[in-house]
Length: 101
Image (tube, rainbow, N blue to C red; front, side, top):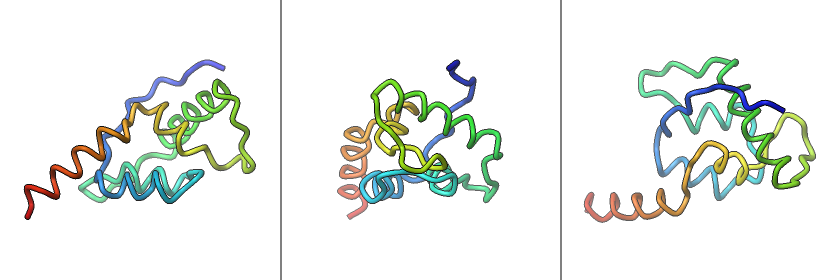
């Protein structure tokens, strides 16, 4: 399977990204929309969501993780495929909470 060409959007909110990562074993298209929500309220196109999902599916196959639902992708595989480093997000989020006090 060829990897689709897609620009990975910026995560809308590190806190929300961490909640999604730790609370969802699999992600739906709506979860992907929430993760990459735009500050101007516009949503990702369905084509972008599909390409992001395809990247995650390729990572799932590479890691030999089977999906129980073809409309969902494994959360860990998705974050890895999209280059989202959870450890880095946790570190930054902890620092952000510290400076906001």
